[in-house]
Length: 509
Image (cartoon, rainbow, N blue to C red):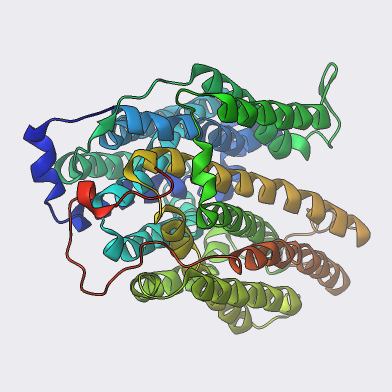
């Protein structure tokens, strides 16, 4: 059953939805920025907090875990209590935890604060997609998702650049302090501009909550930390592979329970009846895998072989961000008119070719302009993927499934990122060992001043490691070839209609 209050529902749905989307994207940009911004601050945190390397690795790992594990649940909570309410609560938690991160004086305290920060992020992300799905008519949803997708793509690229600048100029604490004023502005804009939408009186699936939470934690923790524990024993009788296996089994039980639950499951399996939703999930996992994995060999090559500072290394990614921003409006318009198969196949094709180019040219003496051209082409390819996949995934979903669908989509995206991080770490170690090297690039030799033979060998190892990315992206390319034409395709001049009338009933209802 659905309940709402006419006092605040009707006027809100008549508002122009674009200001609301911009307000949401500010908060969304901030939480995605924090998935990558910490990487370049690792040495500074180790020195200032007198911490072990493995402990500082947990500063990022704890955030990713706390972000990924609850996202299925928080998507459903948005349906129940209202996506605006969940977004504002999550933003408050995230902003307060950011202040806590910057003020902490121990690595243990920083890890705990990052867990709280991740929980706040997990509450926000599904609501952004759900609100877009519900306030934008189908005719304009592609352009809205283009802005959302561009925000996601740019944030993951800007993180290392901004992180390097802040660490070099103000100190590592400021990668967290900067979130406080941004969070306050984002809260005020969301409170003012984001509409309150109708909620759905769900019977909450508590068994589904427990099974999905335990399964996601075991799977994500096992994958993410497997490399650190050399894929063997974590503690006692618990090994990495047993933990991953347990996660898979528990998630299988979760899916079985969702199929058997005759009341109201946490993850309605009927969302997967829509082929485009299922394919979009697989494709975004491949994209997320690729972008998470790609940064590691590129940043290692830039700092170890070329001797670039964290800021200079991050600036190599600027052409990607620029192309994503420039192309976002055009891609948004095209996604409302062209078959998603055409756009995403083009995007995957350009992205695969660009990363192959980067892998082939990566060497000790590679001209900088060649690397920047490859980065720009990567930006072109990605701009046809983030936005179009999000729009295609949600285009056929009815409003009552917006939160659940957004939660599933973002959970899959996060798992793809974790797999990318774990997979590239293993491959980098293997390729370096094959060259007789370690990640340090050479004992006692300053980065950027390696002997020619060592620099060439290190570059070869990074180049070979980078080849993992196009191999995985090829799976995404093959998947999007199976897209079908969306049920509701935009008419160019379609007027804005309230969410309650924009979505006719269809087979998913």
